[in-house]
Structure formats: C-alpha cells, structure tokens
Length: 426
Ligand SMILES: *Cc1c(COP(=O)(O)O)cnc(C)c1O
Image (cartoon, rainbow, N blue to C red; front, top):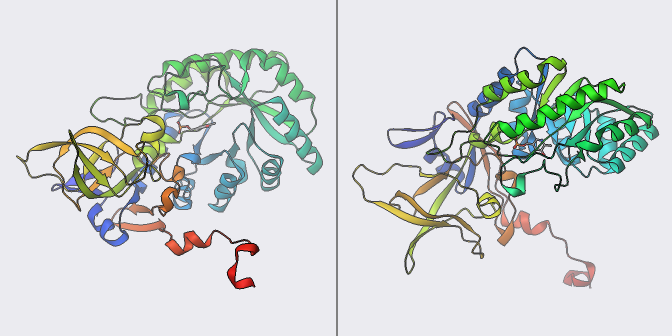
C-alpha cells in the first residue's frame, strides 16, 4: 500500500496534488511519501515484535538525507555499503552502533572511517577483507565487531543481476567453508566475532528461498556454537520483493516473512537484524515526467517523455516493469491507446515500456512511474548532460525539494581545464 492515490481523477501524493508539485518544481522529478516510508518501516519492525531485533534500512535503495532522517526518527538502523553511505548515515544523525557495513570491497580507508566513527558490525565477505579489518583495528587499538557473510548456495529465483546467494556469485564465503573461516577469525587480533550474515538477493517474490537459506544459517549457528564461537546476532539481509505490477503480483508480506523468521530461527535466541531496502523505499516514490511529443512510427505510437534512462535505469538494466499512469485520469468513455514509452537519450535502450495500454495522452500531459522510490534516484547519472532530477518529499499537505536540480553551469563547472588548454593563462 502507498499514499499515491487519485482524488476526483487527479493523482495526489498524500494530500498534495502531483500537478501542483510539477508546476512549482518542473519535470521530471522524483516524489516521495513520508507516510509510505514510515508505514513500510513499521511493518518490518512490527513483524519482528517479540524478538530482540533491529531493522537496518539498506540505504543504497534511496539515500537522500531527508529520507534517512525520516527513518532514523523511527529508530531505524542503517545498512551501508560504502564510506560515502556511512558518512551519509552519520550526517543524518544515525549513531554508529546502529550502522552495519556490508559489501565485498571495503577499503582500508572505509574500514578506518567506520572504526573511528563507531560501527555496529562489519559483515565480512572474504578472508583478505577479514585480514584488512584485523590490521586496521589493531593499528587503531580497537576491536572490530564482525559477522561473516555466508553464501548458502540457494537460488533466490529473481533477476540474475540481483541474485547474490548462489555459489557463482561474488558474495560471501561458501557456507561449506564457514567453520574454517570462523576459526581463522577467532585467531586474528582486533576482531570480535558476534554473528552470521546472509543476503541472497533482491526482489524475491517467494518465502521459500529465504527459508532454505535461514535453515542453513540455523544449522551453522549450532555448529559454530559447538566450536566455541559466541554467535548472538543473525543478520538476515534484505530482499523481500514488491508488487511492481499491481494487476498480477503479490509478494509475501513483511508479517509473513517475520513469522517465518521466528519459526525457523526463534529457538536460537539470537538478536535478529534485517536489511530491507526495496520494500521500504520502492512504493514510497514515483517519478513524474511530462510528455514532450506523441510520435507516430510506422507501426506504433511513441510517447516521448522528458525523463530518461539516466533518471530511472531499472527498465534498461533489469528489464524492470514500472506501472505508468496519467497524473490526470482520462474522461470516462475515452478510447484507450497503446504506446512505446521512451526517453530522449540517444540509445534504443532508453525505452521504459513497449506496447503499453493506457489512456490517450497528448503533448504536455503528466505521467507518473510508480514504484520508483528504490534504485531510482540513487542510480541516476548525468548522461547526455541531463541534470540530475530533483527529489521532492511530501508529508501530509506539505512538500519540500530535498535535492534541487543543478543548473547547466553547475554541471559544467565541475570539470576543470588543465593549464595547457587554458586560453587565459598565457
Ligand atoms: C542490496 C542489499 C540489501 C537490500 O536489498 P533489498 O532487496 O533492497 O531489500 C540488503 N543487504 C545487502 C547486503 C544488500 O546488498
């Protein structure tokens, strides 16, 4: 459920007409709903009620400072995957002891940043990385809390680019080698082993792969405890999918996921951490665009809109589907139309949808891409020297620009000219 609903045929973000935001901010732009972010965070928090737990929002899904502050105010922890994200989490006021550091390639500088600023745990993904964390912690004279990310060799049954739990993927250490790697961790200085981490992929639409992975984690917990390791925290990753196509998909709900977690892992009395990103942010955001031209092709109509693959790359990168709706609904009785919806970028990949049935649209009409809150703005670029599009946050009847559109001048001035090209220096 989200808070982008029609009232009298017009799309609203909470209590604000989307048309009004477009008039003030210009298109294209991302628009987020505070109430939806809050609702989704609480669904996870409540799903784990009765167990010691922390919901660490995977901020790579949408990491604007205003979004982080909104979630931090509810008590959210953060899952970060870079030094930049760590700095963002701290800047939003999240204390170090609520920040989890994931990712396969943490550099020594990033490790030092986190150890100095405070960290809940590093999720370690390889032996060389473990050695690096041990070395930096020893040099700083501190102890680094770690879990080891295990790769359970489970098929997440999702898009290949976002499946992470099979043995051919770069993530984690094979679960078959876990005992050996935990023994190594226990022998290294500067490390404190506190738990196990697993994350098998994103946009999972069934519970079975999660359950298969968590059963392996439960077994491993008992084996490691028998070897003397103090396993008290289980980080279960993120990955629960969202209904991108309203008409025909219904992934499991957080409450069902939470019940499964308690059933499979409850007897271990571990603190449970989860790292949802997409489910918290995905349906909390839309991308609003304007139709520039309706162009007739040989055998189809193209809707050329002012947003493009550089603004929302998911269709080009993952063949992702986004529901696309008019901001002002068609009058009843109007003929439906079918469009290929494309952006202005000079690549055929810049296609959002093919043969999409929708109401007839004309130049200047506004459309909204639903479910664009996660992996939308954060993956955007300035390809074709198109400015990064603004982000807007709505709360009840208020809205604010939380990242403004840069000017052409700002974009150009980020480049610098070497002395030998600088005409004014001779
Ligand atoms: C991407 C990622 C997540 C979040 O995944 P979602 O599908 O957005 O919930 C969580 N943990 C790790 C380690 C990740 O890489």
